[in-house]
Length: 85
Image 1 (cartoon, rainbow, N blue to C red):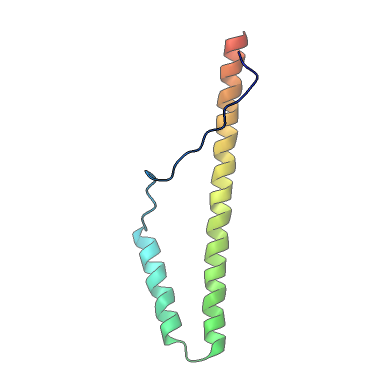
Image 2 (cartoon, rainbow, N blue to C red):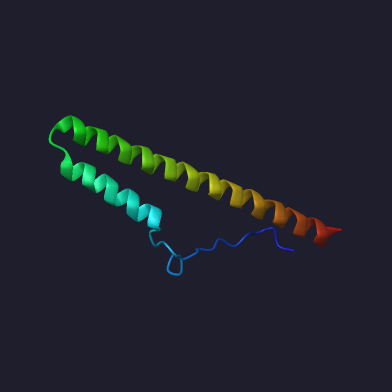
């Protein structure tokens, strides 16, 4: 068995990145709030909500990626243990 690992790239072409109904609703709601804003304070509040949504989603994505790496690492370790046993 080789000690080298091949680095591969995974394309995003086949990945379903379409918006859910929940995403569409949230987008419409925030757009309405922005359109209805009559002063800078209201716009700031809408911007802060957008930041909260963006950072929460990024944290969720990061957590899911970490979990996936953990599962793949465990599967690889089990495979290597089976191969060397």
